[in-house]
Image 1: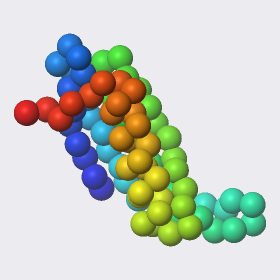
Image 2: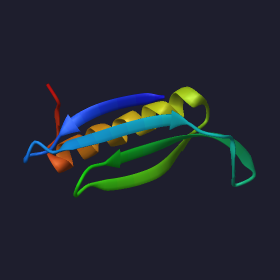
Image 3: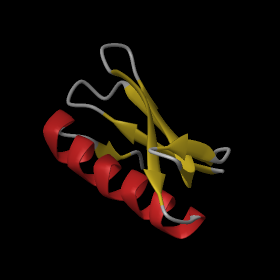
Image 4: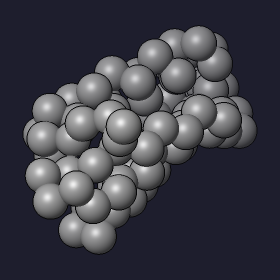
Length: 78
């Protein structure tokens, strides 16, 4: 599991977690999954990303997290 704590523009804590998930059946193939959860007082994302293996699924989750950091204007809590 990966956890990171951010703060939004009003300095409210926002917690991001990425966890490795189970194998999923997608179009007849087995794919690996990662769950990305980003929660704050006004932020609530919960999604599952897939990849051909755990590394690709994790990379997809991290890339999406980076996009959400920019979209929601999050900064690392110091």
